[in-house]
Image (cartoon, rainbow over all chains, first blue to last red):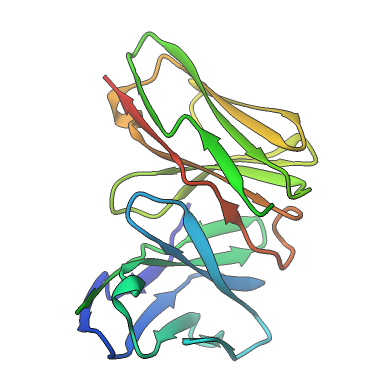
Length: 109
Length: 115
């Protein structure tokens, strides 16, 4: 199955800085979701954005969706060491459930 | 209870063994999923059960055999696996099958090593 692309593949920043990750997809979607995964653990749902929405917020998270560019971004503000994890977008389209390649985020204290 | 429980956490098996991975949820979810994840890669969908019926099989080899005995349980039977099948196997559930607006709830995974 096709998989979306995320960039950057890896991101290392200082604690307190903002982290932005991008996700591009290929086909039309119904929803796009973002998940977080600590090393070797299960995934945890962060936020869902529907195809008719452009922006959503949840705490320190901000997600945008641009359906004309088939892309989404996840912004984590005021990063903390505990935000160190891999972040995946998941595109939910007709008959397709596909995770992006993921961004490995490292927050340095 | 918002947990998806997977057992065992770790499994080592030989290529001639038969083993099973188990997954359980008590959230009343009607869709359950098996994903396979290799190191530094995203999860790849293997199977989806909706209302205890197999609704998606992503061309998974027959050495992997899913089973959904009831709406709370999902098994993955393993037989004659290859070393390249070593991976983290993740179970997930959702309120209903995809095409809806719910999230996936994941278990912590079963780390499988095939010798």
